[in-house]
Amino acid sequence: MRIARFTTGDDPVYGLVDGAGEKIAEITGDPLYQRIELTGTVHELDDVRLLAPVIPRSKVIGIGKNYADHAAEMGGEAPSTPLMFLVPNTAVIGPGDPVVLPPQTQEVSYEGELAVVIGRLCKDVEPEDALGVVFGYTVANDVTARDLQRSDGQWARAKGFDTFCPLGPWIETDLDPSEQRIVTRLDGEVVQDGPTSDMVHGTAALISFASKAFTLLPGDVILTGTPAGVGLVEGGQRVDVDIDGIGVLSNPFVRH
Image 1 (cartoon, rainbow, N blue to C red):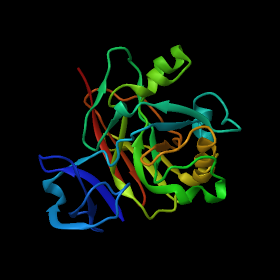
Image 2: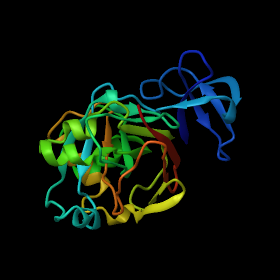
Image 3: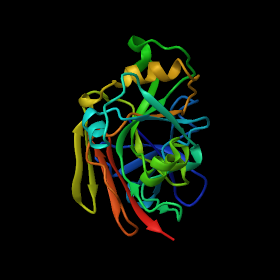
Image 4: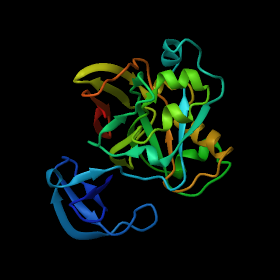
């Protein structure tokens, strides 16, 4: 099931996207907290504006260097335990929204990633139970200011600027997170292409690890790491992140 958040010009609502990706059927309320019920209203997908499918009320948890080839291209090895960082929810934007390159940085990079959306409150979850707390999966671009990442040491600023966490185009609730391919394109050219099976720490292990540090709340998002091929992006360029089984997240980059 594909669950999207969208607007037709009024307040945001949620809907179910059909298999062809052509129509969206409105549902009542917030599906994270209420049973899904159709309102009877159906829109053409081209007639609505898709929004970030979830705005985390609590937190976005990032995972660094979770693909060995990416860790190598960054000049190191993948850590033996997951490397976590937090991203403010003010960084979240939706498909088609512009990523604004701030004046403090001259080296901004894309990172295509699989994102996990937590479905219920949980703490100290064991790996064998971890996928049971998942609401669904979406596509993320973990945008990073590389120069600030190097200079700051801590990653909060480099990863947390407004607009630096695009999510979308919707949440897929029926997905095997271990068997998907992540393809990132910069202005149409493939720059990243790797399977989620290459993760050093799999999705269940990441959820468990995070839950033993933080209570996870409905709508929390875990970014699971990026494959090799990260690179710089300039104002005027567009980044598309395509994950099998979910869809394409596309965002322009602008510098004011």
